[in-house]
Amino acid sequence: MTLLTVWPDTDPATVLTRTEDPAEITAVLSGIGVRLTRWTVVDLPAKPTSDEVLAAYRAEVDAVIAAEGYIHVDAVSMTPEDTPQWREQAAAARQKFLSEHTHDDDEDRYFARGSGIFYLHVDGKVHAVLCEAGDLLSVPAKTTHWFDMGTTPDYVSIRFFHDDDGWVASFLEESVAHRFPTFDEITAAR
Image (cartoon, rainbow, N blue to C red):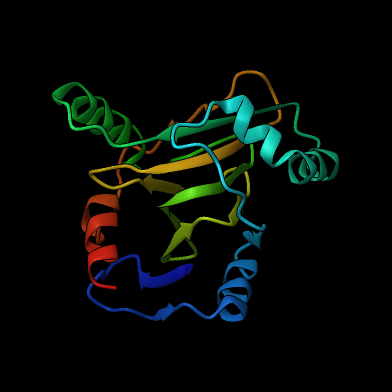
């Protein structure tokens, strides 16, 4: 189940909100312009291709494209492997997203399998949204955030873009990300 944790951006030891209540999560996120919706989860192969994921969710993907005007959609998956090469690639991929950044475009992600945490730094607070299978999170353009997929990433997600450039980030010079609990810490505490 989706989990929302909110802290003041100056004090990660003080939890202002911690909830798994879908109505409360939706209300808090809509207050900062973020949408969270749910889709029915579809069974996928163990290591699905992007085309297989998009085909499984074709109706839902088409509805988002029609509503939001996206022109490029893909699916990515991270499936753990017990090899040094995979661990190195996973660590590099994780590191790329751990610093605060913004995008000129909305960031819409659907989790078809697994989980990850979007940390949204808005109005003096950090909102950590643990997204799990079935969650579609829509983060508005220019929203300061970071993403943690954990030290052993295991997820399949669909990504939506308004142009062919895909994921383009503007990183902040100073980031509070390193002060807040990680994916591994948050999921271990559940």
